[in-house]
Length: 320
Image (cartoon, rainbow, N blue to C red; front, side, top):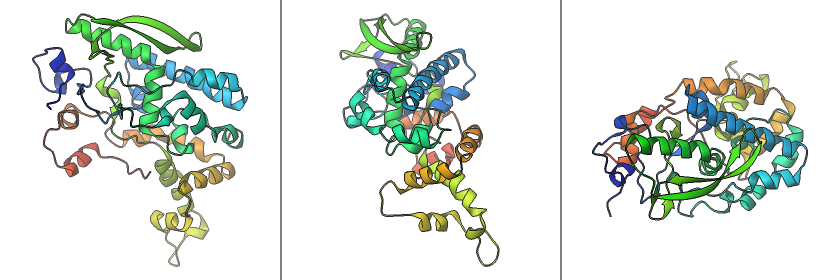
């Protein structure tokens, strides 16, 4: 079966992301791209600034709930954090497991109940991917979609107006209201495809893989720091390679990197602050926003060698 893209459904006689402000996703399959909060934060754009304000408001309440052990607030915050199919991004056909439900997230975030008191520098959204085992692109992107549903809805309606697409239905959804610091219910006109709401996503805020997480924190902070310690110098006075250090730290525990990160950060309280400070430079050293050609290759499956794509992305190596 041939893929049907937004541009097809809307009868836009243009091809390629150079013509669009949104990701021209296929509507009849998963599109393995994810909303990246660092890209939203780094985008100098009114829409992105409003979306980032909403995200920061949510996570301010989120971390406050865990610091105060406020179970009622925790439940309220995660009550509308559900699997999202409206964007057609990620694993949107029920394959992403229970973690993308309120109950699943409550269970996944249980380690945070003690970690928030052991590591008082935990505080930005990206820290969840460092200290919560298995919480990565798909779960995070779904959570962000729920939080900024209103901003994504506004963006979608703006694009519909641009291409003279009339709403063909209505949708009712919850979104995070930064002024009320709570979820709010909204009914809005929308575009529906096969009876499902369609949310368009700005092409500037998506990636296939985050450039932050436990792999990066472990490699760029913990291992690099250990290289400079006396006990990790070889007999020639040179730093031992990070791969050798990692091999010595490795255990049989599936989540050994997370445990190592927790143990190290509790002792070296400035490590996480250093990571927060360095995150913008990590993104600046690589291709932050996918260019139109790369998006074409990913979305339209244009013939491309995987090495070419990796070269174009210039990814920082992240081990999961």
